[in-house]
Image (cartoon, rainbow, N blue to C red):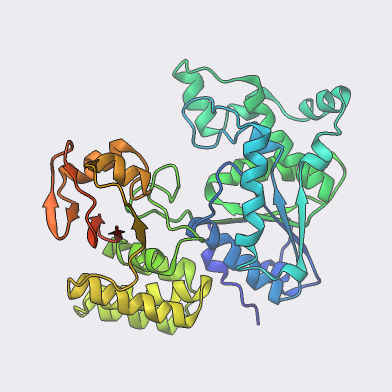
Length: 391
């Protein structure tokens, strides 16, 4: 029996009359591509990685494609303006972090890793013209984000039209049977299917999965929106972020991230309907997720730390320490940014104004505040970030 939940997929686009044969039939090559446009993968990516791991256990071949060429163009999906191109150095730096993260989920010995610069850099001008001739401008403008920009007189650069063509050409080069992606990638995946047909190949089956909302509960999980849970987050950070998801997303997170069996999901839904405190369900969810990327021991410690800090209002035992011997006053906003307790001065100011910063448990709201770095001074930023000064 298939370990794959068919109902999880938003789209299954195939020429097969038997969907079950996609999962239980002969060995298939299944491709997933990720552009290294940022260094961190997050739980939104894990929704797909989790399904790939299930396919892997069933004996299918997984191709993980790192889009080091296409990342330099920039995927226009969901963008209201032309993206700024990344440098080759930035792309390489980001790509180098991906494998360690992906292999926290996939079996490295059963995964083929490819980089699309290997073949896309080899395309001649005549081959590029030939590729462009296989798709029309009218079809490109059917794409929702292009259509909105065109109607709104917002510029669309020619190279943006190349992105779906080159991503589609990846499938032609690899001759994969199936390509998987989020629902926002449906247009790009269908271009790959079209180009395979044009090249005389059997068209790939397209599988799309739901987009996981971020911690704001509205927009898709994204590092750029600062609403993500990173695969490389520490156990305590990962646990704390999981506990901060909106209550209305509990079932969705469990469904997309934990492979629940139907009866388990129904039991959890009934508990919530009967008045169970959502916090109790989130404690179990957070424990399960931390276990996946760290260990059961790490998950248990993170759970105990969360209960201790947030339920009992205690200070954690494992606060990072920083030694400062200079006894001159420090600007609090600068200190917060220097210690990476906030991503920017703007965010540090916002946290201060919201009363989310304290020194030795005294709340500070003045953005111009300065303090003396005395021994054992504890700075708290937000709900989960602490640092202790040692002099």
